[in-house]
Each structure stands twice: as C-alpha cells, then as structure tokens.
Image (cartoon, rainbow over all chains, first blue to last red; front, top):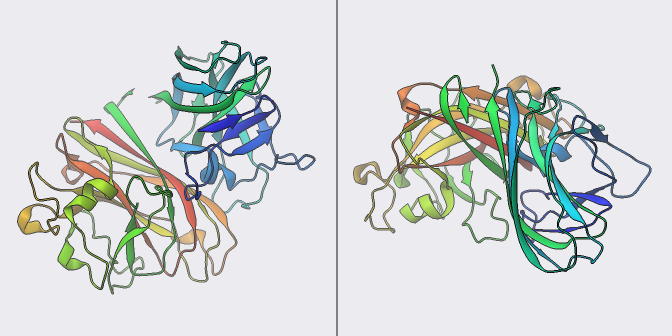
Amino acid sequence: MATVSNTYLRFGREMNYSTGPLEWAHSWSGSLPADGSSITHDAGAANTYLRNYEGPRFIAQIVAPFDMRLVGMSYAMDISNSNVSQTGFTVACMKTSFNDMNDKDGEATWTAIGRVSSSISGSADRAERGATGLYSTDGYGKVSAGDAVGWVLTSSGASMGSTWGILTSIFEGQG
Amino acid sequence: MTHKYGRLMCCNVRFTHNSVMGYMKWPYHSDYSRTLYHASYVTGTDATDRSTDGIIPAIGGVIQDEDAGGTATDIILYDTIKELGVFVAPLDCRLISVAYSMYHQEPVTDSEGVRLGVMIGNFTTGDNRNYACKTSTSTDWKCIARVDMPENVYVGDEDGQPIKGGAEFNTSTQDLSAGQVVGLVTESIGASSGFIYGVVTLVFRTV
C-alpha cells in the first residue's frame, strides 16, 4: 500500500515497521530516471537521502542469486482518491549495489533497469492491471549476482492517491 | 525462469532479526502487525559460533520440540504453517542457492552477524495441529541449508554495515517433494546481533 505523489518515488519501509511492513511509506524526492540511469544521495533537499543501508533495509525485494536479466513486469492495482489531473503511473525496477563493509551512511546509487507504466487518467476509483515484456538491447536490464533489486512507484501529472497492489518481475538467468 | 540448471523458481523472504545468543528465530504469525519480524523462537544452551553448533542443526539434521529448552520454546505443528512456511514446493524440486542482502544496523562487540537456516517443516495432511513436532510423528523440522555471514567482515565492535553474499547447494539433502513447506530461521553468531534487516532469495530447480 502507498500514498503516491507525482513528485516522489515511493518504496517500502523496514521489515519491522510497526503499522505494516508492506506499506510503501518511504520516498525519494525527484523524478524517475531513464532506464539505465541512476538516482543518488542528494543532501540538498528533505526526504532525499539515499544511503547504502537503505538498499537492503527498504527497497530490496530479491537478491540476484546469479547474473540475471529483467525480462518482464506486471501489476494489479487498486487506486482510490486519485487527483483529477493524474495521468498514469510507473513502476520501475531498480538495482542497488554495494560491497561488504561499505559505510552504511555512504551515498548509494539506485539504477533503473526496467519499468511498466499505465496511462489511465482521472480521479475515478478503479482497479488496473497490466504487463509488459522487457529485453534491453544495451544491457541496462542486467543485474549481477549479489545485487539487491526492488521497486519504486511514482505517478504522473498529479497524486494517484492511495494505492494497493501486487507487483511481479520476471528474470532470466545469464551465463 | 529458464536457466542452464533447468527450470528455476525463486522465493524471496524479507525479514528482521534481533536476538541474543541461544535463540533460533522465525516469523510470528501472518496477521501480526510486524509479520516480517522474526519474533517466534526456541532456545537452547549451545554456544553459537562457527566451530560449535548452535540451535539451528547442521545441514541434514533435525530439530524437534524436545530439543527446544526452557519456557515458551515449543515447536508445535501449527507453527510450521502459521509461522515458518514461506514456500510450498509445487512439484518435486531442489534448493540450489541461498543469496542474501542485509543491513546489520548496530553490531555489538564480538557479533559476527547471523546464521541463516532453511528448514523443511514436515507433516502430513490430517495430522493433529497441536502435535509437538517430533521425528517419531514425522513432524520435525529438517535443515536443508545453512549459511553463516562471513567471519572476516567483522573486526571487533563495528559500525553498522551492509552485507551481501550467498551459497550454492546441489545434493539430495536439498530435495523437496511436491507439497513440502520450507521456511527461513535465523540465529545470532558470536554475540547478540542487534537489528539485522535483510532479504534472502531461495532458488529451486526442478528435479
């Protein structure tokens, strides 16, 4: 579950979050980068810290057990109280890399490796579902063994209100 | 997914572990507000370091109710389903990989992190849900994989740190029959761990 704005990337909270570990109550202020591009720590604005520890603690949903490539994403969403100016949403799959003994507060880098989007507009409460196949030709969909991978959600145009949903990412093994 | 090892299935487990020595922990029941927090446990008196078995048995070993000492340390059959289980084998398969990405928030002096155990929770349809889990009733928990966080990561009292790694397996000990349930248990190594947040990915291949 998440309350999603068009000015934030939303992602999960820590696993022992008291009101529910599945609520996406953390955010990074800014826009989703293009596939293959990254977001990083930005100390100049509130709510935009991106530290090494936030990878395994917040965003990670899967650890790559070997080299893999993202080949598909799908979603089913329940959306309510979206703004009339909302024009869709995007779920991006992102990877975060670090090495053992990295400073926990060191500046992290999260890289977009693929996405699935909706272009349904408006304020009607609704259910949505969709899927897309992915196969990058420039390699941005690849993740290396040990990379932690998760999702971020952002809306377009305006807030998409309260959102409940389930996401699936499909990978193929490399090598 | 399809891979050189055949058809693969992945199960991802997000969790929080926080424990002193001598506790094997797993998640509390599914409608607990902190359902990913490893809050259920059994205790034992064995030291838990890299040369001495703690409570999580060695690979191939089992733990049953009578192995759990002290109070509030029962292993009851309903715990297997209500708390431990994260993956039910949809067909015969073999666990071949355990990968982890974790954040060790505040390691205490002499902590070496956490030991991960993948356990099969044995039972048969129709068993009494209140059975104490025992080998004699085929309701024990069998360890099919065990992974320790690397020793050389920790030197004394470290600051918080992210940790990643994994291990591969490929023996009949890791085989599951369709319908068997597995789960993840955790145990502090060396000393009390403090909070550890992480995700573990289990990979199974068809056999």
